[in-house]
Amino acid sequence: MGCLAIGIQCLIGVVFLASSAGKAAGRRSFDRFVSSVAGMQVVPVRRARPVARTVVAAEGAVCVSLTVPVPAATVVGLAIAAVLLAVFTAGIALSVRRGVRAPCRCFGASPTPLGPRHIVRNLALTAAAVTGAAAAGAGGTTATPGGVAVAVLAGLLLGALVAALDDILDLFRPVEAQAQHPYGT
Image 1 (cartoon, helix red, strand yellow):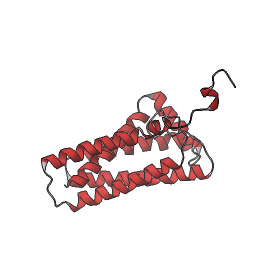
Image 2 (cartoon, helix red, strand yellow):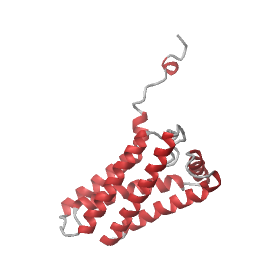
Image 3 (tube, rainbow, N blue to C red):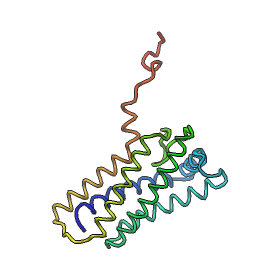
Image 4 (tube, rainbow, N blue to C red):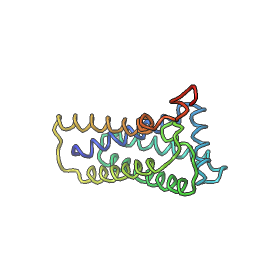
């Protein structure tokens, strides 16, 4: 496998590991995710828990597939990731279009409402997963140890940045006028 496929494998692996771990970190975390799924108003409320279980299981399957050191397993893992990301994107787009302001529980506890940035993030990750699957499936080039190291580090770093994106962007959100002037005006 080439360095591009390895880097994307690490990127998608970290994103899905952070996502599944954040949702399954305990009963409270999972219940918040179930509430978020129900709040998106994409599936009937009675189906929110089974859908949430399926999402966490599928995300775990992606993680497992991407750790198997066989190119075919990487292709399968990245293909599953691309399908999941496309479904997530469609669900978020539908919710946003309807004006639903459900919190993004993509990585666990974030209270940030779903919005266009989540759609863009998921579209970019979908494109990366498809590109990685194609690169891993093409096989061919043998990567040098230095190239592999750079690809792994870059993928891990990008994955961590994607998982923390809401928190990073929230740092640049304007502070409420009331918070700036605690004693009033």
